[in-house]
Length: 105
Length: 188
Image 1 (cartoon, one colour):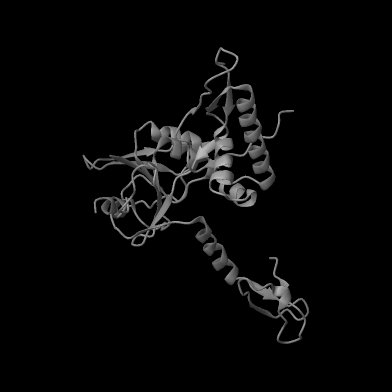
Image 2 (cartoon, chains in turn cyan, yellow):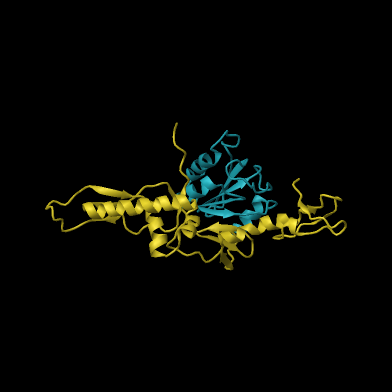
C-alpha cells in the first residue's frame, strides 16, 4: 500500500507540511517494500487550483492514504470520490521519520 | 454574463438504485423517456420525508442555505410528479454534489481521518494502529475558535482598563471595575 505524506523538505528529518496543495515535497512511502521517494511538488507556486492539480498528481501515483496538516474544501470532495483516505495530523513538529515509524506500528 | 456557480451539495448516502420504471401503461407503449432526478434532489427528499428533518436542519446537513434547500426540494417534487403523471422513468444521476464520508479521531496520536469506504467499518487508527478511536462530529470543531476568544481582551472605552475576555459572555454586558462603564469588544 502506498501512502503520501506532505513534507517541508527532502530528507527524513524534514517536518510534515501543514498544507496539502502547496507543500514543498511529497513523500511516497510503500508499506510493503519500505521504500520512500521524495518528489518536489510541481504545483507549489501555482497561481490557482494547486489543490485539485496536486490531487491529480498524487492520485497518478496510486496512493491509498494521504497524511497532511489540512485538506481544503475542494480537495475533500475529490479525494472522497477517488476513495483515498485522508489523515489530518495537526502536530507540525513531527518529522517524516517519526510519521513512518508510526505507520509501522 | 454567466450565472453564479452553484455551491457543492453534500450527499451523505447515495441511493441504492439508479432509478424507477413505470409499468402497465394505458397508452399501450411504455415510454422510454425519463425524468432525471439529481442526487441532491434525492438527498433532499430522503432527509425531509424519510428521515423527517425540517428544511433548516436538512439544509445544514447538505451545507447549502435554507432557501436553496427548499428550491432543491421543490424541484425534486416537481420532477417526481411529472414522472408519475406522464408515466415516465425516473433516473437518479448527476447534480452538483460530493459524497461526504465519516470522520474519526484517534485518542493516542490525536490525528483525524476519514473512512473512504462506507461498506467497511474502521477499527484502528491508520497512522498509529491504536484501537481507541472515536467518531468525529463537526460540532466539536468550534472548540479551537473558542480557545482563541479566551485570550482576547475586553477593553474599557473610558479608562483603558483591560481584562481577559470570557467566552460566551458579551463584553457589553460587563462593567469596568475601575470606572463602572460598560466594556467594548477590543477590535484590534
